[in-house]
Amino acid sequence: MVVNTKNKAIRKNTLYLVKKILKIASKSRNIAYLNKKLFWRGKMADTLNVQQSLKKLLDGNKRCVVCKQQNPRQDARRRKEVSKGQKPFAVIVGCSDSRIPPELIFDQGLGDLFVVRLAGNIVDALALGSIEYAVEHLDAKLVVVLGHGKCGAVTAATQSPDAPGHVGAIVKAIQPAVKKVQKMPGDLVDNAIRANASLVVNKIKSSKPILAEMVSKGEIEVIGAYYNIETGAVEIL
Image (cartoon, helix red, strand yellow):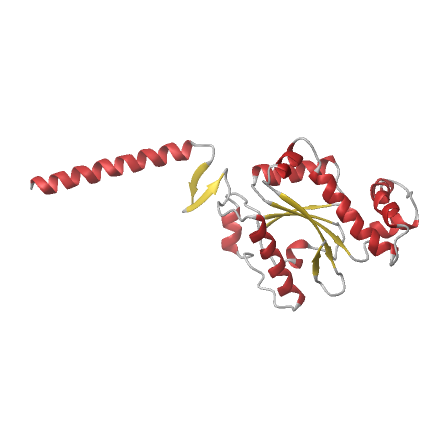
């Protein structure tokens, strides 16, 4: 009887300590248990590192190229899961072109990618702020600037340094890439597309105060990529 009573007391004390720890954790800024899944600042806590994130993207693209998409994490269960919070494993800075949907190109699902899209995959202050949110608050480690073949915005920039209306701002933003490749051999538009992606990568990397610091500390990585609009394949630049 004495042993059983002692065991009961131990279990009771243990249960009390566990409940106390969980109560403290639930009030913490960084830890919360939701639907039996661990979240980090309100997100699913299974953060992938840069190499894992890139492999996941490229594996998905390979499936897309051979038309063997898995279309993962797109059902009602996933919708319910991400309604509690988001945990994208990568940021895609892409073009607004209707033929370049990142989730399809990389065969990913709801909540997998944080996508920032502007014509010509350029970035302004608003786009940079969106990227900052994704890497600082959502803990994404990889940022991919995705240029693509036959980009209309870059094509326009190679034809004229000006354009009517607000399109002119897009053309102006791409002009440095056009000037950089004007004397290079090969196709001017395709060369400019690749150069533009690389210049945007550098702009993101040097963006102060947040992104530049995170890059210098090795907390995030920013890379360029090129999507072949004919084959569907993604090439890392």
